[in-house]
Image (cartoon, rainbow, N blue to C red; front, side, top):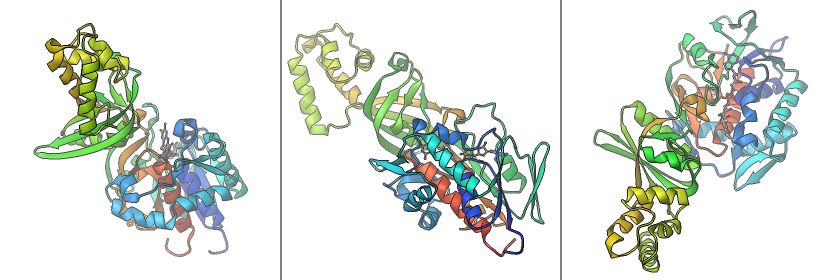
Length: 415
Ligand SMILES: Cc1cc2nc3c(=O)[nH]c(=O)nc-3n(C[C@H](O)[C@H](O)[C@H](O)COP(=O)(O)OP(=O)(O)OC[C@H]3O[C@@H](n4cnc5c(N)ncnc54)[C@H](O)[C@@H]3O)c2cc1C
């Protein structure tokens, strides 16, 4: 580095921007963090239901990440992985705890993650400018960035603007206009980790039901069929399906619907039963309920609200008697419990999703996360075409990409 410290500007004071700022400032640079909102790290506060699930010890890049170029991600996580994240937070004074592999702050409070990062930024004398939405970037020589009333000059610039996932629709400004204005190509932004809205009207009385289930999503593009299967706690809403297993496959539904594909799902409410034991259970349930109400038989297997809807769909009323006259319909009811077909019409909008799929294509950046065609400009976080499963993988990407961008932006040479 020359006489004066290298000036690094970071647009976006979210998870990846704060990580980038700490990495660059630790390398001796003069760092300025520019944040549109009135405070930094606001989105972090709502993560993990206020507990901030910031990474996961059960980590497999190919399984846990999606996007246009997953094969390139391994190298980034080799450079800064889950163990590095644990050390990074410890070096900031935040102790982590683990629950079934999921990593959280020991306090189980997201605010302590922001507090620890904020205190480290302060110690490193990072200049933080809030209420500063950047509207324009001018490149070469160096970078000039313009907010409504101010302009800033930097030697290197990091774009860490995230996406609009989880933000109210009116929260207009985002970083993609900036990215496109300097010629960076983007893949369509679609909601990921969100609920699915379905065509069927029978969902209305099911709102509030939670149950363990398996969701199998089928996406038909002409004669090509793609399926995704996820299990976990399903949440039924008045418009369709939600909960972790739905979140996990929602980005594929969004991509399919975006391509004009037909998207359906099959819900299995008793996924723990293999075929043989299930058939035996159905026969026993039928036998022991002979002469009783169909409602009793159904409520012995699934939640009451769900049982009533499934009875109706099988052509039964709750008062019908289990017996020869209803046998066929009772066995259709059993079949529906294992395979309730629904038609997905849309994914909840970006404003209600946890992350976005799509973004700046990875082809635009080097392994240093530097824009190939704009030396000195670095990118990190959710702006890039990388999205992770539920379980701390999105924040892990924010820490990984933020630290890599910050470290390389601080390096000597180049721009
Ligand atoms: C409700 C919810 C719960 C979540 N829970 C989890 C979880 O438990 N675990 C997990 O791994 N992930 C979770 N996520 C996802 C995770 O929060 C994001 O993936 C992560 O915050 C992305 O980090 P980022 O730095 O790329 O973007 P952000 O954290 O969104 O930060 C971007 C920042 O840039 C600012 N900005 C944007 N444009 C400009 C501009 N033009 N000028 C100046 N500033 C600008 C924004 O105001 C924002 O502060 C959750 C998301 C939501 C919405």
